Length: 332
View 1 (cartoon, one colour):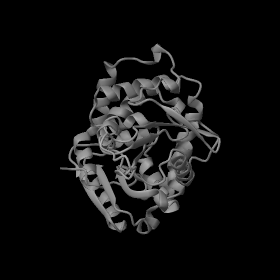
View 2: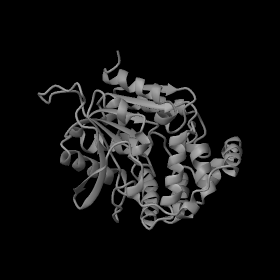
View 3: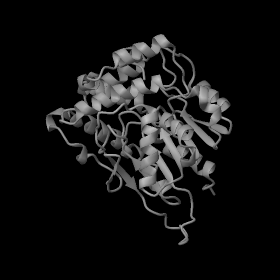
View 4: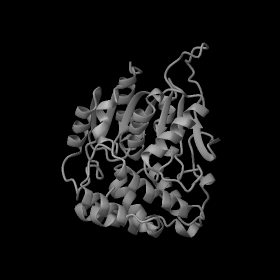
């Protein structure tokens, strides 16, 4: 992830648009802080302890057409990106649950899960996800990961291949590579208190100029939650998690090991992704990053959705869901 100051310098038109929207936008800080338990979710939240770490998750249960034998369609696990949580999948959960059991967890450090003093690296997350899958009776699944969650999903496939039946990578981190100097700059800029320093205008600008290309009621809800969570007592630990996540993604790249991932893989990017590739350190096209990943993975296909941004599954849910349906054989 690019430091906001440099990222916005590379996309002045988007920053100007975000500034105009901020000028007339609702102000949420005055409404007071909220606790993680107050976050909106599309399904009831469940909790389970995995090696002393409390994991919050959503579980759709078996689909209506599942046979009684229990040998029905694949389970799907959804892994969100950096600073996100399970409700970022609001357009996928009801759709995929028509034919699959769908599980979406809040990674530790985020959402309604606990915030331990942990490394928050992709290998650490992969171990947590693997043990969580076993605990919730999902020993093997189609794993769908967005952004950082995509790098976690690839690490899961590398370190715990028995858990992964297929991969869907939505605008994944881990394919793009960084020079040692760029990596060091980003790690030094993202201190463990940096996320706490972001004001409401900066948060809104980040959401509407970098993360989402379609600003709807769901995005506005997420902005409000982020602003109000930032004033709550648990956010200091979230800020630590963000910093360690960024360092972890840079310190544990997966590019050189992608040929070891042999499961069928679908890569989905939006054509107008403003975060991948990094516009300062790696100028180029998003499609080229996706094509590099599809070439490096032994059994991969690439779909690029026109006009969608970094949160591709939100910006074009119909296109994203259709691509996943086709990949899983649910289309028709």
